[in-house]
Amino acid sequence: MSSKNSLSVFSDASSLSCYNKNGHSIILNKSYNDKNDTNDTNNKNDINLDNCCNDVVLDKVYIDVAVVCQAYNEINIMCNDHIIILDEIDVTIETFQTIFYPYKDIFGLNKDFFLNNPEMIQLISFLPEYRSVNKVPFNLLEEIIGNIETDLGVLRNCFTKDSLVELTNEIISIKSLLDIKCCSVLSSLSWNNVLDIINNYSLNSSNVIPVLIVNIVFKTPTQGVKDTIIRFQYKICK
Image 1 (cartoon, rainbow, N blue to C red):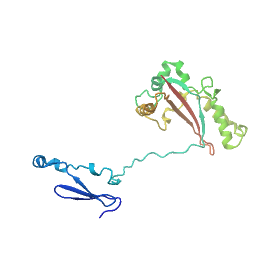
Image 2 (image 1 turned 45 degrees about the vertical axis):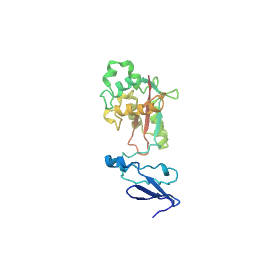
Image 3 (image 1 turned 90 degrees about the vertical axis):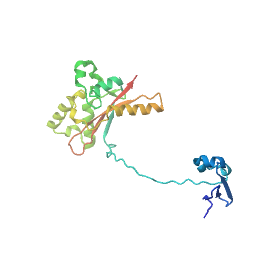
Image 4 (image 1 turned 135 degrees about the horizontal axis):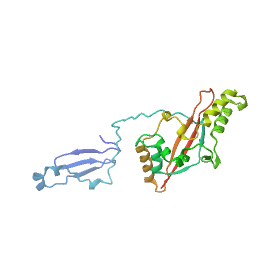
């Protein structure tokens, strides 16, 4: 009943025998004596394996005992979208929380904060005096129209005049995140999850600088025009 990779065991009242991979018999003495035999029955189950530590081959047996599944949301691909990454904006973690998490754990823009602190509007502004891409002033209207031209393969001169005027009015009126509809939040992390992620990265390195990103997606029902995604990058300063 033995094989090269198995250990055969036979037991009697005073000793336990096993066979190693070469078929040689090995005696495993129980670590108890006659005196302890009558007083401590627990010691009878203790086996001294010192005699065969190096001679016996013990195989690991891997046994699957359970499978646990956690489903997660579908991931949509945006590789073909127009993604504009704005230059980083320096803020403290407290300021970021005040602006974007005024309701504790739920994401939302704190309008009252900017009404009471109008000088802070620059932190959420689209205007070129505050926003740039690789140090070049950012122009939201020009980016949107330029992307439409690229996707449709026509110049803006081919747009109907009324649709171009309506688009210009719509985009030019968006001066900051306050002008984005608040009910348009597609998804967001809870504040506790944000802090957990930062803490997890900080465990690996004390030099981690979190950059928290708020993505603004501009969509149009115009067929063939891709989304334009503006990424506000907030570098957390201590």
